Length: 137
Ligand SMILES: [Zn+2]
Ligand SMILES: [Zn+2]
Image 1 (cartoon, rainbow, N blue to C red):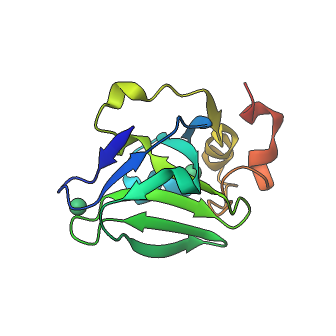
Image 2 (image 1 turned 120 degrees about the horizontal axis):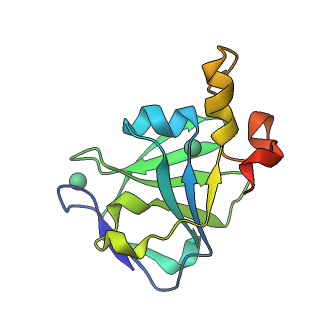
């Protein structure tokens, strides 16, 4: 699998299939990308090779996102809870048809937000509203 940012400066190549394909509905992903849900492909870190350096930014506790320093496209997501894992934005795939989501994350957060009670700060699955069984179809 291969992908790249909008301007083409930062390209990636994965030498194995993703172990996970998800659509995330959390407020962080929605606001950072201006879209929802946001698709991710999960890989063991060593199988992904980068052709250029990403610009890294901490976006919430334990979460580091990588983007193209030139065009700003978000490319990757890492969380200290899963140190060996790297999640790539499925929208950066060269062949978008290669993304077949298996599950939804954080659908409950969006429901809670509708009641004015969401804090929008919970990280990807594991804590808070995300732990709701409703997140597992
Ligand atoms: Zn770029
Ligand atoms: Zn998210």
